[in-house]
Amino acid sequence: MNVLYITYDGLLDPLGSSQILPYIKGISTHQDGVVILSFEKPERMLRGQQSMLSDIMHYGIHWMPLRFTKGFGLAGKLWDLSRMYFWSFYLAYKYSIRIVHARSHSPAQVGLFLKRVLKKKLIFDFRGLWVDERIDKGGWDLSNFFDRLQYKYFKRVEKKLLAQADQIVVLTNKVVSEVVRLGAKPSSKITVIPCCADFNHFLLSTNTHKSKARTLTGIPDDAFVLGHLGSVGSMYMLDRFFHLYELVTNVRDDCHLLIITQDISALEGLMKRYLKPHLYSRVHIKSASRDEVPTLLSAIDVMVSFILPSYARIAASPTKMAECFATGAPVIANPGVGDVASIINELDGGRVANPFSDIDLKKVVQELDEICLKGGQHLRDAAHSKLGLEIAEKCYQSVYGEITKTMIVRE
Image 1 (cartoon, rainbow, N blue to C red):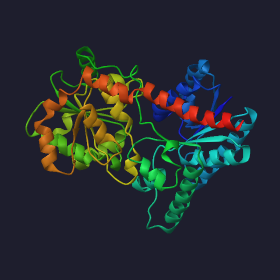
Image 2 (cartoon, rainbow, N blue to C red; image 1 turned 45 degrees about the horizontal axis):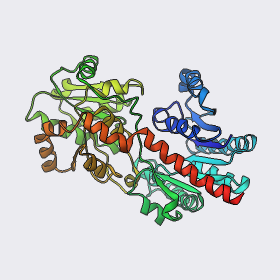
Image 3 (cartoon, rainbow, N blue to C red; image 1 turned 90 degrees about the vertical axis):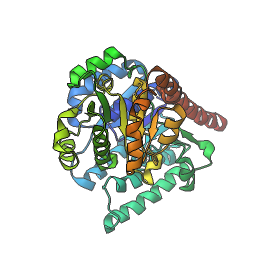
Image 4 (cartoon, rainbow, N blue to C red; image 1 turned 180 degrees about the vertical axis):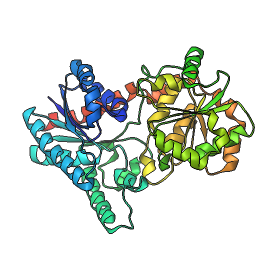
């Protein structure tokens, strides 16, 4: 085996099936064997282990899933990290691994250990400003001494990882200069690979698809549908999404919402807090697996992606944007999140608006039909050349090629 891929996210998680496994399959086409070490939720292992093994059987991929520790706070995380160190060392030694591909910060710590002790090459798949994301998401409070201590420690670790990785992969052009400032080697070692979508999985929405999806969701065929896909935590500003919806209902009575999420109880709480009761009847909520999402997306005319801007968000690349473009759905999004605004403007794939500005939102309401016309085959085609899975695969092949060159020179 040539590559050890370490991820704290599970292959059986929604993220694993959309943003981890497809990339690893691509890597396996140009590397002589890949070993994956991942942490899986027990309930998902019971449901999906056998189908996953069948799926990867023909790709030259060996998978070692470890049980993800739920609860126990910091102690649980330290236990998982200790097992990550042990089993990564074991696998790297057993399979004579040459390259460690570490997805995010904790796996990269282990990857750096293997680089130092076993002289392996390290790809740091940075993903985002994880340390600062912990603050954004409420995991750490810098007014708390212990949380502040953790923050400072992991920022030091981040600097070491960036300085010593052989290759770094980031999600956005916006974060490249910041990664260099934080300690990365010259930018030639940094590759930008945005979150891409499998355009064979997310097919173009046709009238037939749309009618079927609306029947499944209970939405009238002649409705105008705004959509939300994914998590509903505070970072995703559902309050502003509901505000936009109310502004739309003031001028047109055919507007419905479709919200595709697995956080249904949290969503219901947000609706009670931010949405007027008389509008509930036109809100349609669906929990969906990855295989079900493309069908449901066909019901949507325009996707709304509001994400709270912050320092950490400059590194973010929302997967749902690529997935919506693949189905031909335009996107309304806010600035201050990675390369989102520049991609929408480049593809003419929707509108960029400030969700805190009623002037901006009212302008969006007036232009909804115009925004809707930006969708379809031409949007899918334009997005495919920028956000298709094949683009990510070529970029990863280039990253591995650069590492292989340095290994050949040394040998």
